[in-house]
Image: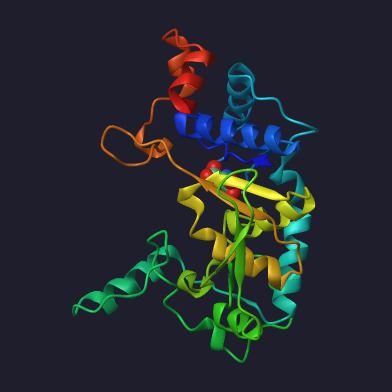
Length: 282
Ligand code: GLU
């Protein structure tokens, strides 16, 4: 099991629930619980949030095994994985800026048509760079790189892509079919992201020998893409469990960007770890 927060804000109740459920699974299975700091989005990650993650989790009483893995210390590993995908024709340079992409999608949608979006709501890449016969043989060092979903799915089409999921730590794993094509040509490396979440998460789950990925339902859709990347890179497939989310009063999942109350604000207001555990786990 691993808990893998991104240091771009303070932890809130949603993170506390995830960390507590990871701990519960690790205890139930007699496994290890690892901490990973997912800080490859260089424009948003901040060192003070890394310190706060350690402090808040220690206050909550979560015990981790082994050293913390910090993704920004392993950029060479993601680069190697990306180069291998590129060399095998599964990735291509996609230099368009955010604005160029947004303009192309808007232009397409002005006459009432809708451009496909991925499960997170981002429009699929609107240009056909993947078709360029002139794709440089060597992966360029600077440009954004995207997955060639069509080539990836074609390479996988002889056997169906599946995921093994478990509802509880002692349930039998159940295999489910997956369709990663919904994600389109996702970004694997961005201008200020030497590796995107999707690339780094699969490389690290393998590097840390994670056997069970326990995380929130908000990441359930991404599992099809992660399983595809694992297959393309010949990495072991963990078992997945996607737990329920903590909802705010507005019925939507808590989010840092929308100002969910942080654990440290709750602590300063006099709440105890026992209050939080009771509130989330009872
Ligand atoms: N870093 C991700 C987040 O904070 C979690 C990644 C994962 O558990 O796969 O949402």
